[in-house]
Length: 165
Image (tube, rainbow, N blue to C red; front, side, top):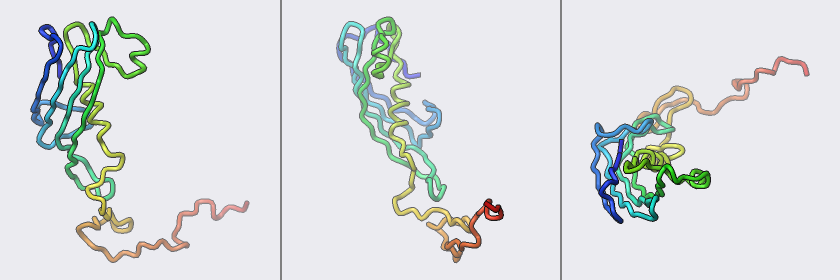
């Protein structure tokens, strides 16, 4: 997907990408306007490269409390080591070194991992989000309800209450 031809690569090269929403699809991630990617590749050894980059954009997420869609700004810095496939060792794979094949470097997986690590564990549209009413299901950020939110003891779920133990 994001393949860089290393045929003319010498020591250091900078890349800059402005991607539209239609240019790329990361499974499970939805972008608002697109992504901005700045990448610097540096030759580290005969068969290894260091990729240092920044990625920024806005992700479309769903709030974990009120279930409303919102945009989450994303700005991340990443550093990844790539090594030629034939030179990879078990230690390299264990240390998260990514491989490349001959003169083709695919940075798609590196970008995908970076974006996934930026996702919040519990997405919230805002810190003060009130969520959905557990009784009537209204979004409490927009509609106030008059539901009695205190659960009475006789209304609690007790599946074993009738058993003689």
